[in-house]
Image 1 (spheres, each protein chain N blue to C red):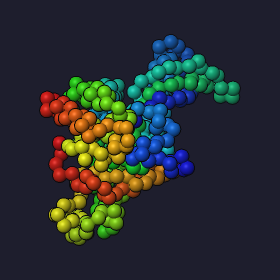
Image 2: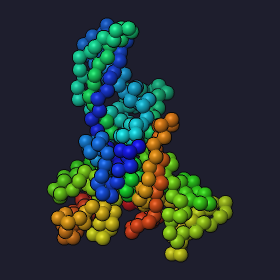
Image 3: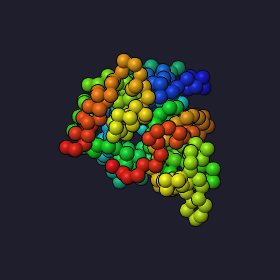
Image 4: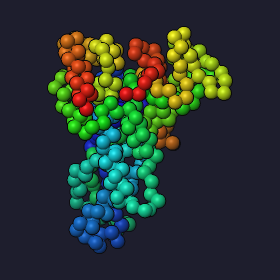
Length: 179
Length: 137
């Protein structure tokens, strides 16, 4: 699910950037914010950080004692992406293994659909393996599948999410045609 | 971890940060990210700066999974859906999946069928409204 949220942030500028004053200062703050934002990648609470949408306000700068840098408290709105348990979404299969498939959805590459959670589907081996059910419905590479999220995991070190998904439920499964 | 263990979209139970956020439909995100990409291209010109991977993958995804592509249609969808008593999350899922029947809508958004919520006629009307916007896009 894509979210738009308001975030507080501290932008730290070195004394050199302050000499410019006025509009240049605001520009420096914005550029610094965008750089810091791009590096952040994701957090557990709001998910993947995609873009800064609006700058709400820039507070008074405070000089930091030991370094001489100046800290500007900033509030801005950002677009993020997060996957929640219970959510229904569409993913694209990018890897087929004997025990399940991996789907990607937005920035998340690791949505795992175990074949235990694919009722009535069986694995068909070969150069391009896939899963097939009695109604000849196929789940293979590049197929779009509508799934329900049954669990999520936040990996602190890599700063990314993984999710476990399932086909157990009505109106879930491969989506036949693109709209 | 405990905060996330209580999360369950099918019951509209979200973490604190999620509650304060607005949910956007894929089509709305597509317009936003396209605009950002234009801004980025203008600012970086010939330099080798690329947008972050996370941005690229998200843009690809929303372009592919947007039900509406015209800016006015997207605005209309948000307006029309806002007239119904829907939670942020429910509105976004409806706009993303565009269920074809009332049964499908209730199946993908279980909270819709709770007592006191929209009845079948209201949901049917909602789905038809979406269909109309799509037709005239």
